[in-house]
Image 1: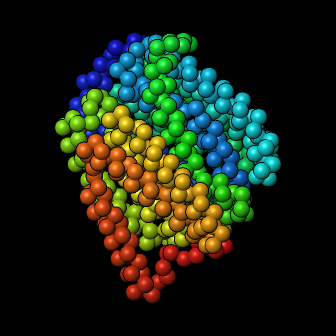
Image 2 (image 1 turned 135 degrees about the vertical axis):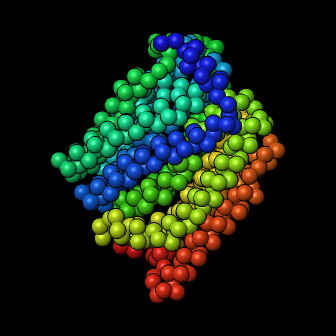
Image 3 (image 1 turned 45 degrees about the vertical axis):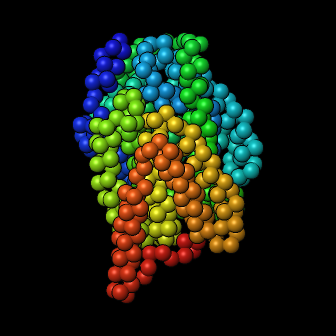
Length: 456
């Protein structure tokens, strides 16, 4: 299949007029994806002990850490480059992706022994999950072509099929053999199936090639993506890395469950950034395109205010939600979730704003933002846990997100485009919704959702 019709379709997309339709498809995709993962999370929590979930938290953190090493932004390069769907550029990116996945899996295997000794987890589990980068590297770059073409509908359907298969495999294995091995094998089967399914998507024919000029272009733009990815991973995972070393695995599993739920809004923000805001601005060639900015700005306003009210309500009812969905072993996840949600909302705002900067070819601002976030987390996580336990860890996460937001906001000011006033009003909506509902609970003689997160 040639790349011409596929590329031409991306060029014909009007950045502003189609935004709402694509936004709805992104919400639909995200809702289906989150629904499947949330259902799997509930089932796994009922089948498995918190200690087993704690082991999986550590394994997944290690996996994502290795997968982000040498991340030169294959997707971002294909989306932003005018020749991103030209066969030699497209396949140079695909070849680099395969080589990178192979190298990372080999490096991960070598590190399995030391990691197992450090965390007191079975070496074979680390060795097995080490195959994930290799399997991920085998996927077709046609997935990224859908993003470039702003074909949110087809990307949505693909992701839902892949995640539905992953859900079925993981739950079936956990029912047969309720252990950490069931989760690890489920992850590997899911990744392998997703990679295989990706070759049924439309896109240019694949062949192994390294074009020197395209190789240099990919790394020139990708160096900032690589720095951002490594620092972002450290900033997003440092709380779990610290807890996994200093706290019992049962607490790590409960915290991981709360963090998984709290991260849902932040993941939505990232999905909208990468599937809509960044490719639309890249297609417009400039972040000053009036139609694109009007469409994004108007939809963004409605989105952040709705999310602020929803997350505020979530803060006020987090303990009830956990009590209804999970068994008593996970009760302390409720207060943890209530305390984590404000940080998640700040992360949403940061991600939406970072998409504007990335679409303006200024990824260095997000790198700097994540450097500051990491610089805040390194001392604050240790001090927070030492003096206040899990609540101190959560406070450090919020401080880190605020630091990240500040740098991204300054970056937007530098290019003459900022949503600071809109974001400030959204935060007030969040605080008003959460505060009002908590006061109502107290007035009715009900307990506050903000209990001792470290209890249990």
